[in-house]
Image 1 (cartoon, rainbow, N blue to C red):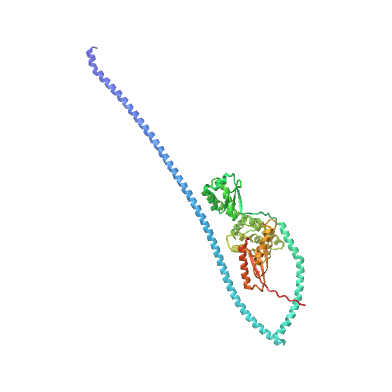
Image 2: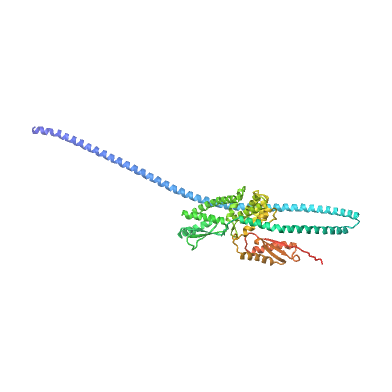
Length: 520
């Protein structure tokens, strides 16, 4: 190929090289674009995933915050609800107490009005009968004077002399026979019945107190019970009504309170809080509320168990609950529920010996002190309160009379009521049954008699019924009937002001005139 041809081919070769370079350049550019597109797509995909993750995290955080706010709201709502329920219970209790007092006052007012009407009617009837009787006696006397030819005074003297001589002779003979027979048999049989009943009734006695001790796992727990600036212990005392004493006693705190049921609720709640470990005001109120509900169930179960142990059935549920409350009531340190069960057993054993109704004896013995379950919240003696409660729930008249008569608030109408008196005295007098010392008991009786003797016109004063009653015999020439009633009230007020004593003390003022003659 010559030089001319080579030069002619140069443009063609250059064109081919240009086209080839352009094509290669285009392919490289397309590859870079595709690569850039893929990279951009990947970046977009990664960004979308990251954005989705962020959105999910934001949603989770929002849900978590919402849940926390909800829990806090529910907790605050629950605390408010518990506080409202507690206030409602207090208001309900106060309302029921006021209603009960109003009912008692209304009942007493109705009874007084009824008695006043009956007295007026009786007075009118007596006056009418007195007038009629006087007229009949005058007519009869005129007829006797006309028939016998004697004056009425002469006939009276003759008739009275004859009747008096005959009656004295027959009465003296009958009295001697009855007295001899009674002395031979009554004392021996009564002792045998009582001794046999005591031997067959074996009961344990425990001394109760007004404090409870709660054991702690360690002394560090005392700080948690007190809480920051004392907020936990204040909250606990407010919720339970019981004082918490934290002293140097190792691994123990003391709960002090006069109401044994509240004290037991406080003990249950504190033991649960210690076991749980979470001690703060909200948890304290919740735990105390649960303990109160559990205590209601325990009281009902205790009452049912007492009925089963003694063998008494058919009691009203409210009476069963009151029996359960007696487990946490004491008298001179003696557990009242244990005392009631023992009285029921003793009375039924003595009733069996006398061929009386043992079922009624058990029932009366078990319920004789039922008023002590609520006597701290109700006015009146426990006998009167128990009588009204049992009357409300339809108890037998024999049971009602036994309740009123066991402290001589009224006379016993049946032998079962007398047996309840005896069984009550035996149960309270058994060694170890009651905590009061002999020295303190004697001093209290002497002080009672001293208070009564300090009043003008008092001849003798005798403390009886284990100090539950003081009988005052006045000098009739110094104290008249009106002053006798005033004297009883004055003595009662002085005893109330100067002495401390359990229950109630009855003051009885006796004024009588005795005329004595001697035949020489």
